[in-house]
Length: 177
Image 1 (cartoon, one colour):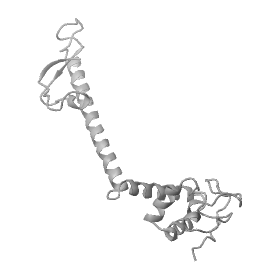
Image 2 (cartoon, helix red, strand yellow):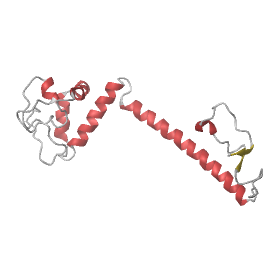
Image 3 (cartoon, one colour):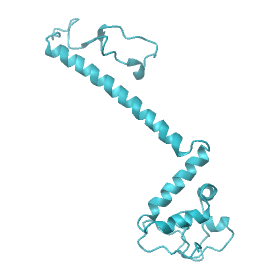
Image 4 (cartoon, one colour):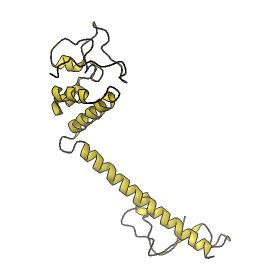
């Protein structure tokens, strides 16, 4: 049976909040309306002052599955397993439809956008270097000085991502920095 007979070893990286038998019951035992044993396996992960953390995990996984997860991993991995379980439950509580998936999708979109910005900057740097190598720029401070970059049709710089209006077109030609 997966009752509270699971005892956590001393190698568990998360400290027990219920080491004193006279202390307050953990959120899991409070929810189940039972006395919290000194060796309660859920006490380190569900402190009495944060009942919503347990309620979210209980709603998504149930006590039986939470305990089964604790049993299925080694003592050194229990803290990480419970952090992942609690994070997933809290994400599902914040976004009942998407949960963790919507967070992952949003982060992937941010990564793709940042990579596109990086490619634009690298393209701009390559154009500037090519102009310097070809001798197209001089240091006289005039129109052809190194403070200017020639923007070609092929390497259209997406300046809209850095504060300009997205509808604003970058015209081929000389652009002052």
